Image (tube, rainbow, N blue to C red):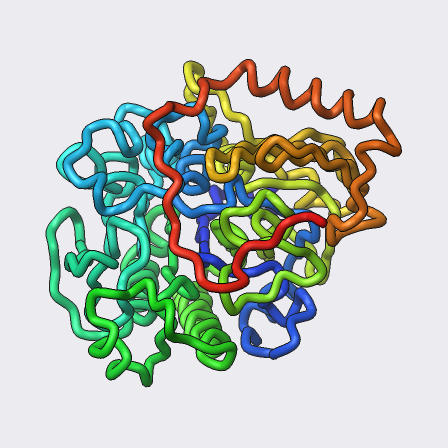
Length: 438
């Protein structure tokens, strides 16, 4: 689909815990993201995009492999945390093909700037799974100034070695990404993953170094943050994305680079998920519906909006297809190539998507506008076209539709390994961060 006839570059930008309505182009109440809003105006905005999970590391398994995360043991952790250090089972197996490993083997230069969160050394790491270089934290959330995780362990690495850097971690990730583009673009096609930790807790702006000293090892930050701080963090990330786009322009490769922006799951304490309810860790729409933008001037018309139902793992399939690289035959992709909708936003196709969570024993199925949801044994049926907030449970009103979607979920679930009994569902919540259907 590339007008230039040469292999495109890819920049895959992922925010952490960003809510559906946190961007201006998704009707945010605060206009904190002018760069991303401009990117949406230059490209294609998805209204019905989903994350593979409502929590970070499971989504990242699907994102890098293009397959449902449930196929891998490490993804059953909700999420992987520091207790997995040294564990040989809780991570992405190096032998499993990934979109960066397949692109690398096809001649692409690959890099990760930012969060890994797919297992710890010596068994796992970005250099073992397709990235030629990597900079950022290996685990989940880190303090933006000390670069320590919630246990006080320093977590900032470059190409497999621990490094000390002074600076705000959002800016450090941006700087690495921009430098990679400057030294790579024009020499070889490249695939760059930019995985920001923003706006994940702790809630710190560039001016909050003193707050980092105060919270020290308690960086889950239950007593901190505000909407203003959260929005400023978004603005810092947005500025960084502007610098990355400037680097593409400066290298003369913006025209033939597919830039994708999304979030790893729904928002948390200060995010905006309107019109949805629910949050991170929920299979309600607020936990899994995410913003998604694709911009590729050589192939995607500006100003498009699509209702195509999509999910994180689709981008692996899309990148490989755009590069002319076949998936590994022994690891067929579950994601779909989004090329048709990139060409024509109205060229939507029907599909089924499925989720499950050990946390609160949740499952979900979306088929067309219908959604089947279970939470702790209770069943719900929603028509999302009429009830985006999932308030009107239609289970008793449409029993045949309920039974049909339940059967579809059960048939899909039978093709996946069961959730391991020893899998952990552990997350820290603040007041009001969980929402339940009425």
